[in-house]
Length: 140
Image (cartoon, rainbow, N blue to C red; front, top):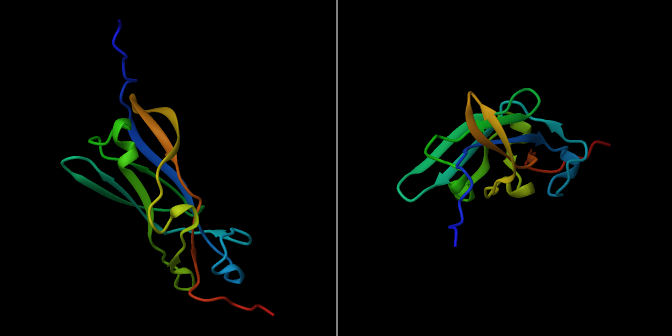
């Protein structure tokens, strides 16, 4: 019988969006009234058998981030990667929430194939993630 062939390996990249939650909804898992957070730091951690890869990236003005894993990480090892919130540059929005596993580290979802510079990539999506204020505000 023919041996089953594995799909070709692809490199790994991850995208997502980070928000600052409205202080009215502190502690509530919602993005109601949230705004995109620029300058938030997100960490991609991949554990392979020999090496632990850690990459930091920062969100743009739309709260969007895109991070390309090192070439040592391929689609075969993507299940060993997690992406999590590290820090926010806003004093009033410093606390990482666990919305979509942002605080503990989210697995990678929905890979979409894309060619970047002639190389095969799988672009995974995570989040949306959110930071929030330390405590509720009562704007009334």
